[in-house]
Image 1: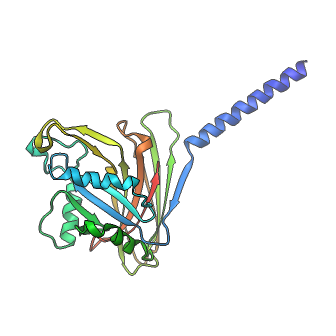
Image 2 (image 1 turned 60 degrees about the horizontal axis):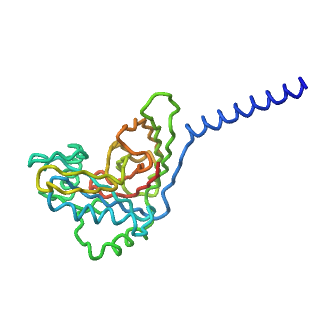
Image 3 (image 1 turned 135 degrees about the horizontal axis):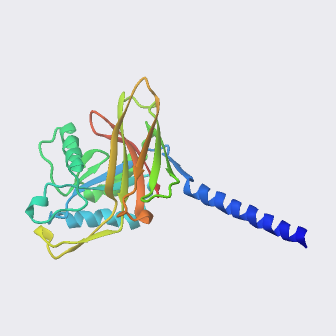
Length: 266
């Protein structure tokens, strides 16, 4: 009986250890995604909750969730800008960093102004909504000149909020471009705001693919063909983990053209 009891206790102990190891593995498990052989397009929307013209553009972006477009063809991103905050409503998703990205992209395209709502398709100012599907497909059939591998690991830590270790491997050996910049973004969907001032006062606005954090640029230049970036990020307690995506993309540093992109759901 004693031997049987000892066996049972040992079995319980081993089982608990196995469960603990499985739990630890789950906490520190790694998710990996590699970019496809084709070029993935990025659709950037520059928008603001203080802009009365922006809600239709926000709805267009949100509709892409149910449009059946694969993230191996197109990845949407919404950058909320701050320059409309002065007219009575401060957009809680806006950052001056996104204002500057919009201006930088405009300068690279030799444009003198920025505006909202503004779409950019793989780095180019975009207004041809009637041919949107055709334009995305035109990019998606091109062979990728840059290859990306994005991995995400939850760092085991009893403290909150949660931390992620992001690794981005890049291969630019097939590209003729010598200087490439890389970005990593955290996007969140299923967001909404009750607007209490400004041009959209009284409206409830809904948003998807909102850029919550933008890291970069990180630089790679030939003859360095292979590179790896590591970055630790702390998740904000405001972010809903089930609605987060981690996006990485590469662009031509001189023209702003987006060369390749990849997305991983949290």
